[in-house]
Image (cartoon, rainbow, N blue to C red; front, side, top):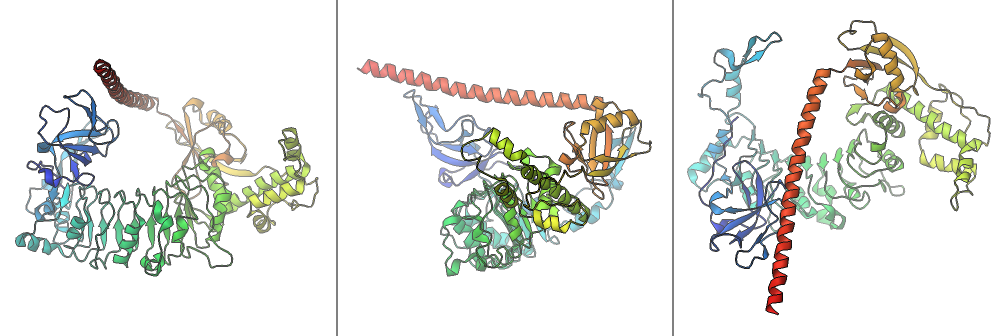
Length: 634
């Protein structure tokens, strides 16, 4: 695959539309034109410049303002971040290129081009452990090349080629492009497209498209542009980071693409879905009757009830992604005796939301079809261990089969539910015995002392709606629990759970030793296990790095804190603990790399601060000069 970046001829000012036109520089940075005209600080007041706000906020030199040469006062031509703006001469402005057959072919090596690996040998070598050179063989180059020609491929990638316009309206060009009518997928992500009319002209050239990606093209909202009826075959559309700010645009897309199955609109502001008028012709369940996957990550959605529930009746929706939205809780999944909402939803992603309580997730049990949940980087999960989060989620959501993309085994579910019952039972026993009530009376705030044991127990049952069901489910295999509010104080404590673990050394000096097989309490801390490993495997405690993996799980999890227990990390019965020895030399190299990286970031921050201080000093100087001139006039 090949790419090229060439600078076009001088751009005419009339072709630059502020807030719409996208440009790039020779380094590949992309930005939006916000101003076209003379610049007050330029030597020539007649020369036309383009004011650019770069997508990379550190690419520019200013915030769109300059100091006028004529008045020594600040003149603002446009507004952006403090180091996001630049003024470019029109001769240096690259507004992109047209989509042409030659550009499409440039991404693929021609069949008659010179071979990269003549004789099946690449022009590179690999070094062996002894320092000798080993040739790298590459077989099947011609066969692969033949299968990657535009005449036979069904999906084409035209990412980041600077495409901003459709091909010229020339018969010979259009006839050559017509040879690619067989294409079913086109990836135009990261180009300079900024006008829906241009986008539609390009897409209509390929009538059999089923998969389209326009991600990271600032195409904005449709406005008065009509999509027409040319996209009945489209099943997948990616509009991530396209600066869409109206849900009406999404509805219009649904009307034009009735067979759409996957829609991604992440990083767009769709908060106005709350006020969307779902009239008879705009009902979402009709517009998106075939939609299976919807990605609404980072779309400024703040309320499950007002925003997410607008999608509740989508008849075939299976996967909903609402990561990085400031949603605090989940409510209103079912109203009264109405049928379950999201009737076919099997996968839900809530990573990066503001959920802070387990009770906020209990409402998900009212979506009976839900089988997969992704929950991380939230106020709730950030304060708990990975194992504890997983174990609690499994116990509270009995229908889950996957959590954070990892399958839940039957054995893991049984252990998580039993552990959950034990934990809640201990709290109930403390309430029943008066320990918690006494503690509350000692630190009483107004109104808290009046709560009796039965009220506290009722609150606990409300906080743990699955508890009584799980007690009934596991009553034959757990200790007898008589804590259902009968007032007894002699129940006694529930014994610690004991688990069987295998401790295996992966260190070079002891990897051939027989593993340790131990029965350990879940409350045992990682530090104690390290001491045990140091004695048996003779691996220095300070150089130990422990991981554990559940049965049939290929991905180990690190036990990275000596003060946390096995329960904290969710180590289950039958788990395997792996003992690795830190490579001191590799550790030193990593520290050096981190120090170098830290120094680089500090230097960048210092440069940023220097720019800000310089701007501040200029402002102060100009204000002082303006004050002096005003006083002189007086």
